[in-house]
Length: 137
Image (cartoon, rainbow, N blue to C red; front, side, top):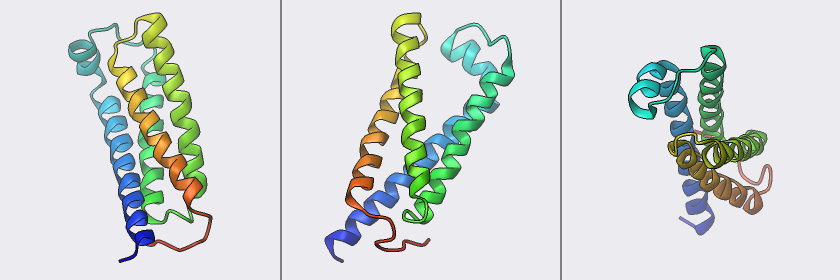
């Protein structure tokens, strides 16, 4: 197996990890919001649960998008770009609220994870051009 194929396999694994991360994180925060707020974060529940659940659902949907990327990286390059933008905004908002507004630090951890994903997503985009090879799964 040549180096190019090994790198592709590593990036595919990265996108699968990103898919599972966002899929699981979104689903857990959507479904188990009450014990998360009461027992883990120990903060007041949101006034309007719909806003919180909409954000969790969006994270869940990004997981689905990264799964599409995992299945075919080259056909879904725009999902990678969208994921980078999403993760930049999430990280910025999370760091702001943790640093300046006292939000629980776990959200900064999620922001840090997203920054790590951003680095690898950008690395993928710089190394591979659209349509170089079709990766199907």
